[in-house]
Image 1: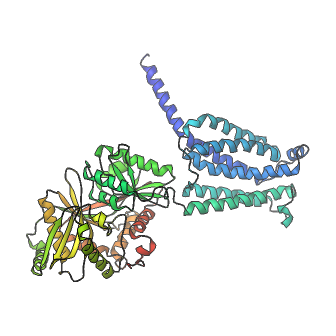
Image 2: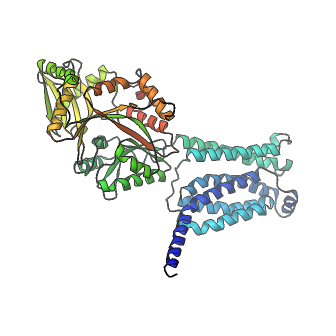
Length: 555
């Protein structure tokens, strides 16, 4: 007995704590229902006997004004239910005030004591739950698509109810300014119009806003330098962690400052590029903290281009995962130019060197001294390909960015004709990845094959375990009957989308190096359409719709 009681009390405490944690959601539902009650009551006539009794002590103008205010209070409670669900302190304060005001409006518009009691009971239980609402308020927070739908349905239903109830009332302009006439149709019209206009404003603002985008823009130069130093000394960092130093992303550091995650905000989605870099023991905590930050702004966390090693942690966050392509990763221990399968690579190397090409692997800090030559190559490449610079998931020409990591260059007659920056990963089996690749049109044929072969050989000699040639988007998706629609559409685009992007050609180019095709994934909450999240990534990478559709060209 002495042992059972502590166990029983501990169980009760844990159940109580769980109930306390769930109370914001319970009060959000109650607030939504209370708003529906107020809107429905305002859309229907008051009980005749009660209204006559009220008219004996209150002027018609006050009664009609209370009727109008009750409509606004109902709308406000539905709106506040989204804030209560997200545990906002401001929503708690506002809900208490509106509930108590609703009690007065319910009595003054028609002695509706039943709904007044309901509102008072909800307020009485909500007031002691103050500590459950522990998140600071955000006045600029838009509603999520789910709450927008609920709001629109609720308002549309009450408007339909009002027009149905007053269907026999003949419309006239006098209805807008008379009081307590035609069974209170005037009050319904005025309140309904106000609620409808407010709904349009809320929906419009929510659809065009991006929560947190202004306050979480590109990182400062100091934070970029801090991230670069962190990656250099990290326990674990994938090569794409260097993309955080481009200066086009926001940076989210761990509490200790020893780990970092790069992201951008677009619409309601907070899109993290790649995996966290830094201490491996902080990885899960950093993922949770980032998801909580996005949620605190009403946004959804999205993780793009993550590997299989992170899937378990993302599943712990309750995220849905889809494959978005495959990376061409070369096992350096097994790489060789010997054999029939590598004949084309041997030929490319021999031909390039016969035509006077030479390869150099320059250490970090070398790009600034070659800035003019590198820019000439880059500009020529962009002009030849009628393209524009990318961003987010790919590097762009920025001398300061190129200066942070090793640089592979090919020269001919002393002139740089091709280059690529290489991103070194950190960890027990580090990977070296290629990022920005540029060459001039008159470079020796097969110059990029030559550059890659020499870079791969250098990486092998330096002790790297793998060489990543980059991702082939949408590669490896299955067009099968039981496959998700996301995968089937992606497979169709991969096979037939050559006019928009050379998906198959890119994979074929990388395949001749004999890589292992490693899957890459995108992860997001189940309520977030992954197709839209992937579209957002494409927009961020291409610089908007014009860039993605090929309408944005380099000047």
